[in-house]
Structure formats: structure tokens, C-alpha cells
Length: 400
Image 1: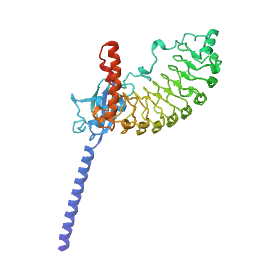
Image 2: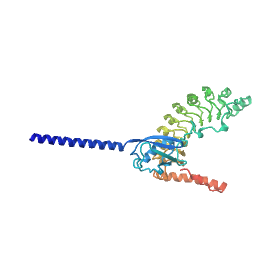
Image 3: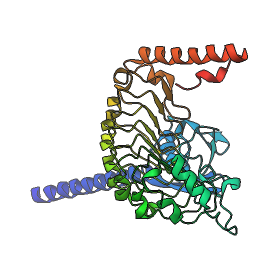
């Protein structure tokens, strides 16, 4: 009888444990369902962008995922679902956004990174990177021949000027100038390759190749490095996606212009250019700047505008001579903590169209001294403009 009672108790206990286990399993499954990954479709500029995200994520997190997909900064995004604007701090679940939901994205003008919002009709090269129609070489027009008087003038002046001559290759006559040539301007042509024999121009100081068809394999950087007097290289509006490590051997370089190309980064060897004073790599697809940038101790002006940067290395604060830093249209949210304290010459800082607000930069050590330099510089500009035109230029103080 006692055994029967014990057996009945054991059965009841097992039953209760089984029920409790099934209940816990059910609750766990329910929690998993509540925290499931969903796919939302964001409508923007004629496109439907699918985004996988947890329904417990905030609207603010969704915006951060959309930033690299649309180039629209988070604070420039307005997300609308069922006629209501979604609030940053709320979760998708509490906003009743479920799997397959369709959300409309409206972008504020000017609050973007890179070359602007990515649109459905965008081509491989953004409009801002393209050469103006009037400057493009006419494919059906023969290149302008080199005459004897030109060659004599080049050797006499040291300036070889062949801009907009419908060139597809560098004329052999240019190479005969040898050490007489100091400046070579072959911008706005259709040149795809620069011959290794360019090293025969041993006294060349400026090489201007803007608006051609130059690609990564078009240049022999080793040969350029042999030009010990070369101080300026300008490669704006070409198709360069990568700078090779050999760029670090151009130790005499003072200015490097590679704006409006397809760069995604800079090599660490850039830090070896200790004489570099001007670096302009705006309007590319650069996502990060190497720590070695701090080695470019002579830099005075740096333009990183219209890229995909979300942060800058602390080593940029080592640029003691830096006077102007242009950062507009990037996804930056903060600046290096010692930039104002260590960059004692900095007086121009352009943060237009970034995530950085005045409240943020006012908290950075050294802000007061920077602000004083900035105001002093602009006041001098205003004094000059007032004396010459008598008008107050409100745009003179628009850059931080």
C-alpha cells in the first residue's frame, strides 16, 4: 500500500515536472519569436532596400545600417511607416514594424556622405567626378600635332602645355625636352598610360594629369620616384582605385591631388612623405585614414571631403603645421580628442554635412583657442571684403 502511494506521488511529480518543462519550452519559444530577425524593405529614390534586423533593435540602429547603403547620414534620415515618422529611441517591435514591412526614407538635403545619396539611376561615376562636357576630348577629332615652334618654346620656358589637345598618348617630342622641362600639363585629354621614359624629364617639378583615363596600372610610380625634383602631382578626375606602397618613395613631393577618383583608402606608406604640405583626396570612397598620416609632419592643408569616413585616427593631431582641414560630407561623429590642443595652427575646419555638432566640438580640449584663431582669421577676411565691397559676407564664417 505504501509502495502504491509512493508510485502515485512519483507519477504526479513526473507529470508536474513534464508540464513545467513544456511550459518553459513554450515560453522560451515565445521569447525567441518576440526577438526574431525580420526583414524590412526601405523605399528610397526609386529603390527598395531589404534590411535584416532584430525587431528589438531601435529605429536609430536601423538608420545606422541604412547610412552606408544610401549615403544619407543618420540625422538626415526621416523614416515613415504607415504615415507616421518613426522615433529614434523606439524599437521596431514597439513601433509595430514587422517582417516584410515597407518603410519610406526621406533624406534631408545636404546631410550625406561621399558624392551624395545613392540613387537608382546613378551610374558608375557620379556626376561630380565627370569632366565637364566642354573639356572632354572629342573622340572623332585628331590630336593636335606638335610643331617645331612649340618644342622650342617648351625648351626655352620649361613649361610643356598640352591641355585639351585630344591626346591619347604622350607625344614623343615631349620626352626630347629632357632636363629642360619643369612643368608638364597634359590635363583634359584621353591619355590612358604614362610611359616609363617619363624619367627622362629629370628636372620635372610639376606633373598635371587631371581629367584623363588614368587607372591603377597606367602609372609607373617607381619611375616617378626617380624624378627627384618632382614636387606636385595632380591626378584629379581619373579612375584610380588604389595608391601603391611606392608612393611613399616620392620624398620630394609637396602637393598630392587625387580628388574625384575611386580610392577606397590610402597606403600606410603615405606617412613617409615628410615634405608633403597639401593632400587633396576629396570625392573618393575612402573609408579610413591610416595611423601613419601623423608622419606627414609638414602638412598644412588636408581635404578629405565627400568620402565615407566615420572616424579619424588620433595621430592626425601630430600635424603641428596643419592650418586647414576639410571634412564635409562624411559620416564623422567625433574628432580626435587632442586635435585642438596639438594642432596649434589650425584655423579652418569644415564639418558641414557631418554628424558632428557644435555641442560635441565645444567639449574638446583646446576648443577656445581654436575658436579664437578661427574668428581672427575670418575677421581679417571680412575687414578686407568690407573695405573693398562695403558688404557683409555672411558666408565667411560658415565653416567650423
